[in-house]
Image: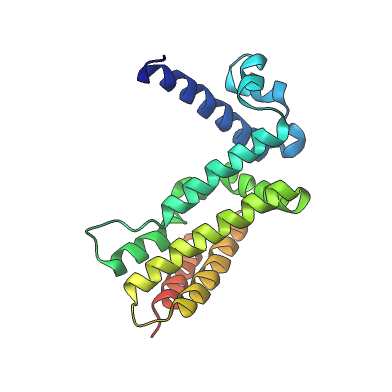
Length: 193
């Protein structure tokens, strides 16, 4: 029987490995991700990467699922705050400084490209996008209970398209004023009568 604390070092190692996968994807694309390169980037033995992950596909799949969890957290309802305040905060989170770095935006481009290149990655990406949009639709519905569920889903999809466009164009040096206008546009879409 293992103690509860025995799992913590394993979790830390797996997190370092996933951090390495994401870093390599952002810097070099899928061609830069190999079991050996990930081990080197994570500062762990190759055998450890092979212990946790069967192959390159399982490594990338785990990294994609981690991004899915991060995206879902952006639109989680939290008790206590007003629904409109929560929605506005969620819409503003996508332009937080950590999401506007060249490395993060390059990672996003790589992840979107991977979805076109591999069936398993496409399924993960589709599920992640659905989960994000469902969370966003729930925030819209909480802030605007007079809207139908279908209308909330439609607005969530429209906001998602604008947000993705903001990230894509941020790589080109989109100025802060444009980002503020885009966030305001997302708020208009979500909260319009």
